[in-house]
Length: 489
Ligand code: ADP
Image (tube, rainbow, N blue to C red; front, side, top):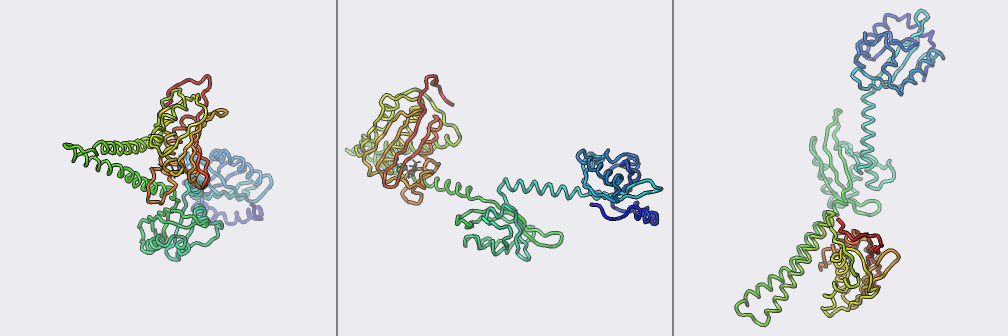
């Protein structure tokens, strides 16, 4: 830190230019003071008084340590030791000092030793870097916030078209080397052609003061498509440079959710429209024959009721899904015979005559829970077996006692399900055949079933392989002796 300036040499020079020194001391804009070896302030110039907000009179005679931050006091003692014990000619330190208004100032301190009539003093210059320190701190805070928010910052120089970017930018694009050069052309190349054209147009047409807002798709290095949201503003720097400065972040999940919602609305409308059209048809026929009923009358009434039931089921499913999503699913728990409840709820399947339903297992098993809702889960599994495994005429329902739970499995011999689809089956709005024009359902049945079972403290799952049929199962906790039958919220 110290230079090789000899204090005696400096002293000689100081005496020679005493008057000039005095003038500089008074007039310089560098905050300066003269201290003695006790760290007592002997003289201050106006610049120093301005810096810390006290008048020169208030400061004279006080000690530096009166203004020093606690954690810096040790450094001031080191300065004292270096200059007056070890005889070093000068010393540097960074310190924070309290201003009169209680705020802090950060200063680089340079101290030069000299002697006047053989008494040691030091001339001290304080260089204020508070603004830089604050900027550095807020930059650090911003960087931390950016890291957590998954947001990145970018800047496009509108003259040389180069792009500067933050760390998050590389993470988003899957770049491994921060030295990778990025400019407008390389950025555009990442985008899908239809989005690229639009982004290029925006870059070309933007003018100073204009906002920039763009959403587009890129292919990442792993070959995945990501939706990116770019926002910014075209600005002119004080040096006259024109640039777009902005943020960007990944909106793939939001876009996916948006698309699922859109899909869901069209599916729900379609699903409702089918039974409503049929209901309307039946009612029109019934209206025509109301005064003179034909033998078709009872069939038409039956058809109307069936269509109405379908509408009611769909609306129920929608309402239930809404309740589940809002955590509003309330259970009415009782103790009941599981085997009997299962046989009761699936009569409609056997009554139709096409499918054979075999319920096997422990007939005496009792569980605690909301019997109606548990029946709904079984019905959903069985209806799915009918819907998605139509050629499997035999559906087995197995009820088993396990170590700490009761397991119910619905087994079909249908087409089975591909392994990669299995983890998503119980997700909201998930349907295996997303693309087919043939709507199969709302993709809500298994989601609602899973939530009902979870609320009972049980688990759901599926074992399936393509060509091997599917087994959809759920468990419920076994009744323990001390458990009370109560209504759960
Ligand atoms: P949906 O209302 O569309 O029937 P579900 O949540 O009940 O929704 O089912 C989700 C998806 O699981 C269905 O789209 C279907 O493809 C698949 N699935 C459910 N049960 C079976 C099964 N037994 N066999 C084959 N696929 C099934």
